[in-house]
Image (cartoon, rainbow, N blue to C red):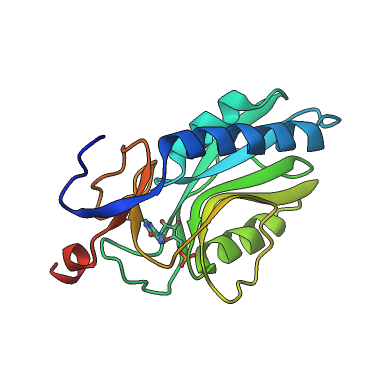
Length: 183
Ligand code: IMP
């Protein structure tokens, strides 16, 4: 058994479960878009870059990746509530089949903002693919492809970070509350 870093309370999603679920999501997307010329995957930096790279390599349909970055949380585990684009797409998405690929949905503010922003650019279609959603009552954005539902705790690994730490773990783990409360 691997010894966990002392900052971590436990594994929430194992590496095996992530890899299996990413393949399932990719199969589903490949089936749904089989008639599309190509699909545009928009990864949201930084958290979605590992998920996006695994997902895109499992797709059996032509796909193009691009990235956006938004600021919403800064360096703490507390939401500022404000979302703004800090890195935009290179190309237009007008008349293209677009999937937003996001690491995690907590309040849903970030995804909802991105969805509205990209929808206003007139893509042929717009869907969302999210690795994990926290157990919440409601969010006001559709999630078309979802990896996992997880408890409402701060998680790190598989692209997710806390102040840029623990991002490259191959699994998703819970960060001990004392770690972000003491900063
Ligand atoms: P939301 O806008 O509240 O849904 O938060 C979404 C964004 O906050 C994600 O894209 C992440 O960057 C960040 N985030 C929310 N929860 C976590 C977490 O548990 N670990 C790491 N990042 C998180």
